[in-house]
Structures are given as structure tokens and as C-alpha cells.
Image (cartoon, rainbow, N blue to C red; front, side):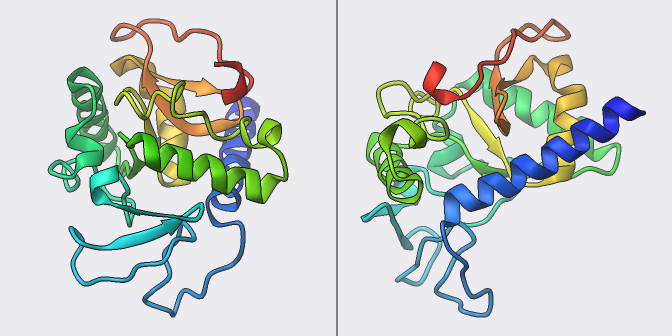
Length: 203
């Protein structure tokens, strides 16, 4: 039980870190033009909404997800439709298994365009003060597994903890020690996950 409590604490801290990375400053939850990731929306429908990230304007066509949701809800969005098919299937099956245990797996990022990934990196540099520090949390467009559709980020503490305990049964593994929300299809079903990298600057 001690190990589980540690993992839960780690997940909570990591999830908090994710919000800090993505927001950089507090947003007003009562303001309909502000989003949880610190971006701002300017338009009317989900398909047409534009968001400010790292000084750039990105849309759903770049893989931006406005609100975390189950993968089945997001199935027709570019962020999910452009994922590697095997990864998409693994996350779907894992989500179904988690639902049977009362856990809703929420996805808040999947495939991203190169320009979206660069915008996130630029935002990270602004928030963390240097490229070296930003690279611990945001990969370059050339190295990011999001850009090639081979990674998903989870959106809630409960699903992160569930995936830590059960993800490998579907081939899903946490990639970086400091990003408990980032999962890739890194092993066979039920196989052993590879040793995690310290952070995204290592790979």
C-alpha cells in the first residue's frame, strides 16, 4: 500500500505540473473565452475555434483539444484521427477496461501539427526562462512523438493512476519520469515497459 500512495502522490504532483506548464498563469474559470490550457478562443464552433499558444494561433486542425474527453468522443478530431492506428486501438481498449472499474480515461492531447508543437515549445521557453529547461517538458517538433501520432496525454489524476497500474496490459507505457500523463505504445500486450527516460530532453 505504501507504493500505491507514493504513485498517487507522484501523479498528483505531475498533474499539477502539467497545469503549470500549460497555463503559466491563472485563468478566470468564469470567462468563456479562457480555456484550461491558458489559450484563448475567438470563434463559435469547436471545429472553427482558434486558440493562442506560444504567440501562435492554433486550431483543432493542428490537433488542439479544447477540453479533455474520452477517446471515443474525440474520435473524429484530428488529434485522435491522426494517431497511429495501433495506439488509438490500445487507448480505446484500455479506456473500456478502465470504465468497467469506474474510471473515465480522458485524453487532452494526441497528434499535433509541427506548428502546434513549436508553439508549445515557444510557450515553454517563455514560462521556464530557457530552451534547456523548456525541453525537459516539451519536445521539439523534430523529436516529438505527438507530431508523428505516437503519443497521448491523459487529462485527470484518476486515469493517470489507473494507467500506471494497468497500461502495460494494453502495451501502453509512461515514457518520461516527470510526465505521468504521457503514454506511448512501447511494449507488447502484457509485456514489460522499457525504463523511463528522465524527461523529454533525453529523447
